[in-house]
Amino acid sequence: MNSIYKNITASKAKDEKLLAVLIDPDKMNLNDASRFISKVNQSIATHIFIGGSEVDEGLTDALVIEVKKYTNLPVVLFPGDVIQITDKADGILFLSLISGRNPDYLIGKQVEAVSKLAKTKLEIIPTGYLLIENGKETAVQRVSETKPIQRKDLQTIKDTAKAGELLGLKLIYLEAGSGATHAIEPHIISEVKQQLNIPLIVGGGIRTKTEIEAAYKSGADIVVIGTAFEDNEAFFDKLKKQQIHN
Image (cartoon, rainbow, N blue to C red; front, top):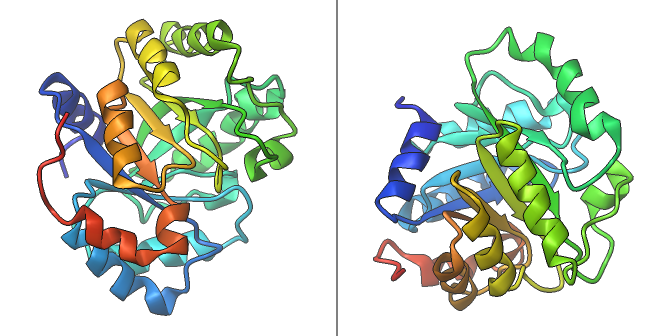
């Protein structure tokens, strides 16, 4: 498989927008994987992210194996913990929760992961993860014991994202959190995008095609959809393979 990151940067250079479907191993029944992935394959999705904030050991490995039976899309780990690392995937977002100040999620978990990653052939993509306040406590907030950045504190959001780039991270991920009450506003995405030279991922609270397109127009290079599909698989019908207008 070609480099996942090189393909992302190539798409960014051509202003080709990408869509990742996020699957939580704790919420996906293995028996439903074939049917679900069939819908993913018929959609405009370009990547599959697998992970969650709280996942029992072994579930991620089993789900990745099942998913890869039915798709050629790159399967990228989006791990909430070290136990979610599996060599069955194609790559991993090596996350640092740079919006928080809990050292475990800034560097501790990453150190813990190194020996496990050394035994895999996963493509490792260093990713700065920013949790943005969305009106309710998220699983990420609870598990990581960190506070999200307030939406109104735009300067801190911009500076944090840029600091991640200056530290050498390869992606910036703006996250409203799983099941967010509302998506990250377009003006926030736009302001952050203007600070960055690296690709920008946006996820959390995006439930309509209109919101996807708004995120793209504001500067998101990759939009991540998770809960919207969990709650309503018919959403896939609105995202059949077609041209998304930038």
